[in-house]
Image (cartoon, rainbow, N blue to C red; front, side):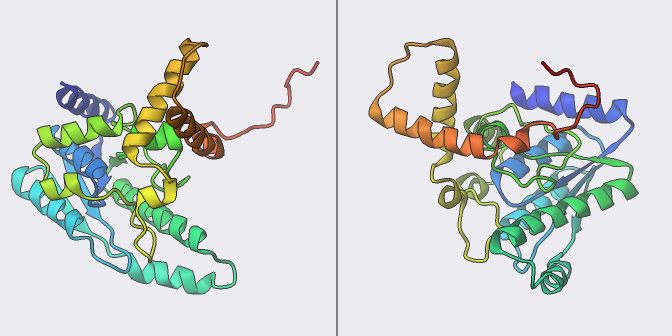
Amino acid sequence: MSVDKITKWIGDYAIKHDKRLVVGVSGGIDSAVVSTLCARTGLDTIVVSMPINKVNDLSLQQCFWLKGKYQNVTHIDMNLTSIFNQFKDTFSDHSSDLALANTQARLRMTSLYQIAQVNNAIVVGTGNKVEDFGAGFFTKYGDGGVDISPIADCMKSEVWDMGRELEISQLIIDAEPTDGLWEDGRVDTDQLGLTYEQLERAMVIAEDMVFSYNLELTEEEKELVDKYFILHTTNLHKMKPIPIWKKHARTR
């Protein structure tokens, strides 16, 4: 099963590099699954909740559940509200809602690396394949800033399946996916314009199109794929290496 294979992969990597594990727990299914996989390795695992302006009960629930279930788990509750608000005030003349949303993700990344550095640990990413390599729905140098990414080759449906196998709280499994970065409470579907089920279906169709030039699609499928490609193309810069000017680049 994927659960056992991914658990072993995380453990093997950490042992090879003589590292502990640090993972941010947001209260969503992705971080719940990854934090549980890390705990299952038996290695020292630090799970971190990082509220900004509001406490996420599901994040705390997952952390407390892990701490009670696995002796190798330590929980750190790092409230970033005052840091974020000071940042917001400092940049009041250079700000936007989107910039501030991304700043929250980057503050969390910085916090995880601060904790990891002190504890000789690696930061374990929680992004899945639909987010990281489909829609590109993550913050560059925010939740995209990690050392390893255990579920980045797993579809969202596979993550939900692993959640059930790992006996993650049904409240977390059923929770509406959200990045939790917006004061108005908007969820992922509001931002993407598609559900994860629709995105996953579009990704599968897009991959089939690569191998079949004469693939017949319904009008609904065409519309779905078009929306997916707009998201993918817009965010492609996040998925590619940083452009570098080559002093010895060949020119025609």
